Image (cartoon, rainbow, N blue to C red):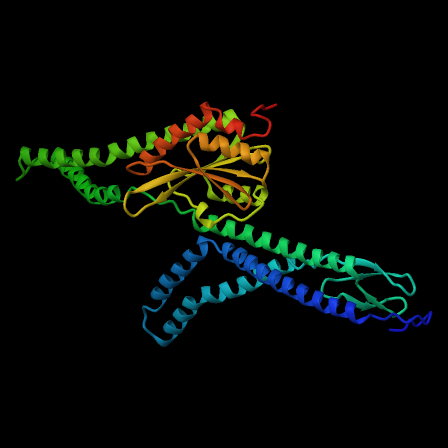
Length: 400
């Protein structure tokens, strides 16, 4: 291309031209990967933005549609169909608006690379997907050389890393939203309590009736039998539930003691774990680690990211529920992680090096959720009293 002001001819030789074509292909692949990561993040954020209220809206609209259609007329049928289809249209409209906001927020382009025109010396910028352009001052050809090409690739890869990180964080938040519904071991109590509750109510009614009306055709023995069965049913359901509640309180008390001693934040919400990952965990972490059940707990220091403790009960088909006591130590390879691995292995943990740090797991067995959590409480106390958590901190456990 010829400079319009000074007449200088800027040529791009064959070797550089081939290098520029190769660069364009590489940048195109990086940009496609970044676009896929961006779509994944957008989908995860959009999915997480629809909460349980939408399910209630759908069920309520279907019930209302059934009531509206009761007159069984043509107008009632049309109105019922509109009520039935209303939530679907609402999801489409709200979803499009939220999708537009999400995309607008994440539409940041890659950083440009400054270059100087060899003809007039003017300063211009090149983008990763545009390694050749005309100078804005003289019209001469601006072609990226070796260092500039490396800077352009680095810019494209930085954008890809940002999009992939955003996609990962949104997947963690979505996993926390979907995995937050607690599993329960109370199904037998619900069944027995539901049947027994009717008996207890009947016994109360019969006793009140006898108190005001008299026995009538019933005998004292029959009334005593009815009341006795009601008392047995109440004790059979109430006593285990009361013991369960007290044991859960002991579990929470042990966690609170640990949090107070280590100046850590305690949460029983799974999304607190996901947010900690977004801030402190530098790599990937599988969604299987982000799950909760009755008694779930997450503990992490208020300052720094030395470690985090997660207790996540996991359901097994053959032997009830076993919580995994997990200690996460974020970071890259180094002396700190090697020391932490040694400490956790001595404490009986199975340690795995994953992208982003160390994950140490200890399975705590039990007959049920609360039995398992009681054993987990003993393990947390051992970690606290044995100084394991203090040894994971770079400062050696000294708090100012």
